[in-house]
Amino acid sequence: MAIHARDVVPFTQARARLSELAEEVKAGAEKVITRNGESYVALIDAARLDYYHQLEEERMTLLLLEDARRGFEDIEAGRTEDAAESIARRLKRLRQSTR
Image 1 (cartoon, rainbow, N blue to C red):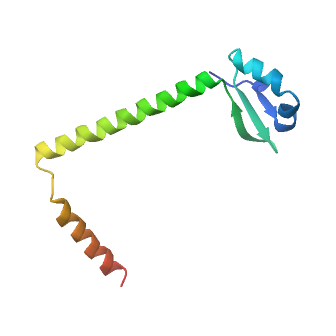
Image 2: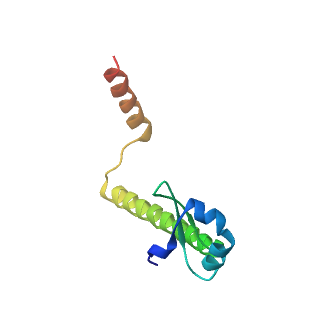
Image 3: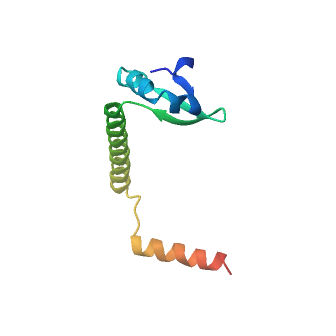
């Protein structure tokens, strides 16, 4: 959904028109509240916010699944190393670089 000029509201106006803006948002609009001419906060319907959060969770799940897929590919290709040895080696390099 595109934000139109009528959906950008200065903070002072938003305070004075909050009930009216809330009704517009409930009807499907989204509002960007500005402060000192800069985007400050957004006013959106609570159900839409829940939907956005669900989308974000799904995206994170897909990213984790992709990481797992790549990890399994690494295992199948033999691109693995012992975790304890790897950590010890990296700690040793870190200690040497801070001397």
